[in-house]
Length: 273
Image (tube, rainbow, N blue to C red; front, side):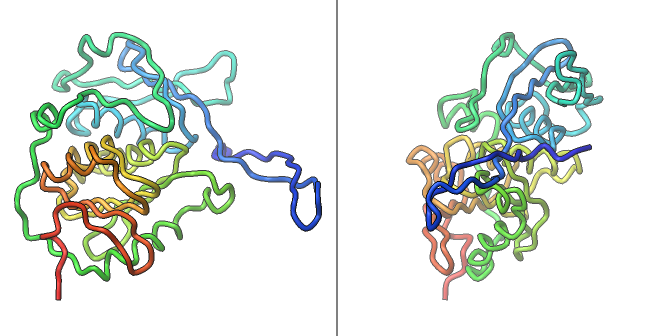
């Protein structure tokens, strides 16, 4: 199967040689339709690759499935207009899955910069994903300091294009489990969580999630649902992301730059002294 994660494009580059024509690599962005049975569920914009993981992570995040065992199968449907594109996935659920309720009986577009959040309040989120319990996770800050470099080292598509977000799952001693890239940061997180779900690793109570860019409310929500106790980002969280993390006993770290970081909630999980 050919790599569709990036495309070549001619550009006019200005610099030392004004107006030089060069070839560049652009991150790919294509639609993906996810169907549950015969119900069209969503059309999302994503970077091609790891569609199975993306579908599993998305369905888990929306509460449509709770475990890998609730998925009977995933198959690519033929696209009559573009048979070379794998952009329609059909997911078959078992009888034990929560499934698709009336709020999903419609088509909608999930933009690549901000995914769909199915609930609007912290209280409602905690009904499905309660706050994390106190645990014995205690991290040496030295482990955190190296995560941004380890994440970047795994970003092969970003190295070609400079245009993708990434999410990475790490063990508590900083070893990478999986890193995924996508045009949408929430898609990258869904791919990581879908990877873990496919391997029946959830709950991820002994892991760290690292994301490029900022931390949104939705990414904190996905982290909580996967029971990941520590979320680290290169940039800042939003105010609502911080509020949800604090209310959920989740360790939220931002502005990881070299040997500098900010702790916004859950500081008890970082060793001091």
